[in-house]
Image (cartoon, rainbow, N blue to C red; front, side):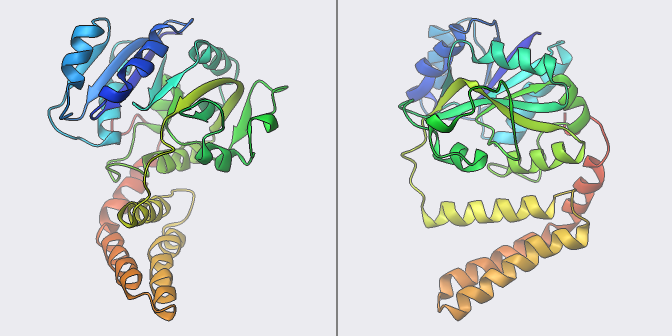
Length: 296
């Protein structure tokens, strides 16, 4: 199985060494493609000088996470790769991760996405988001007697995706610029009767525990979640409208009754913003119901 690892970079310098060297030390061979979204630091020059075997595309601008990944997926399909491995720039993997996931993918064709266990940047605890998604508290609760565990959602820090999935589900939706792409993608994955799961036997570290959750970041996550609900093709459009736009209005009213005028206005603004995207949402919903390499 020929695997292309895709990393979307933006000011990647801090993590270049642990990220790239974990791939270069992989016991299973993978070609590495870094797609740079207009870094302001020395990301591009450092990779070209220190890691000549790594292919790099310098976009010169920030295309967003989804659109940049779609470029890499297009290349993988054009060049005859069997799978892509999407790896966050602030993440790295154990030496046996890619090989284990490749083997599991061959043995379990109903799984459209596979992931290792997500650890924090220190590698001593589960990543908090991952622990929440798979509903376990710490590493001692991992079901190590199993080779593969199904989950309802795992974020896209470490996604192993066979090309057959891309041909069925496509790439990331243009509705999402940064964040929310993975939630939308898994909604589409489930619609096409594919699963997502993780192997409790292999690991990746995600160095994100020190990110500050600002008010702006919180409401951005609220918006992309609600947008993913609006685009969710597992729901009829009327039902999706209730779970997104009307849910946003409800949150605005709740903020009003709790005398939180700033939150009230923000949720109302988000409801209006979602409503203005209705035409595009409907267009994308119609397209993604069909099996095809959409957006690639």
